[in-house]
Image (cartoon, rainbow, N blue to C red; front, side):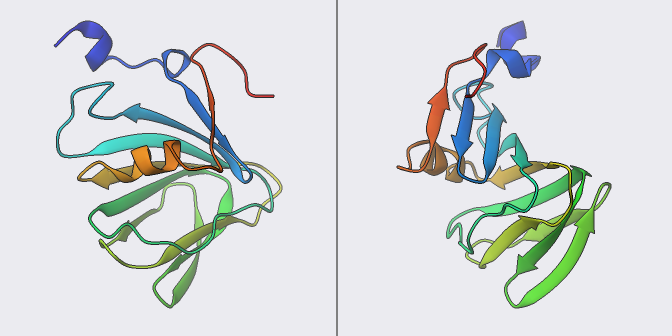
Length: 135
């Protein structure tokens, strides 16, 4: 494994843009060689969120870095903010919505990896090459 696979700079990773925000998958099987998990930075713009969905074969952990939002897991809804973490079992419906005036930033981790590739290849996602700024 080379240094570039162990030390990841966000500038060296593509950005995915969606209607509700941006994503940078910092650790994937392709970028770091990680086999059992993937991790990325998610930014939800103020008032934005993503629809309820599931990842049938992957567990998910979200660690909130700043901002405030509403996290729905199954039928349970909670306010989340910086320093909090949530665990979402595989196959459980969930959604995240930014309820604050500032971007809601969080680290998303999947085990095993896979959902990040589905998001990248979805018709709603635009890929911005490394080093370029999203429009």
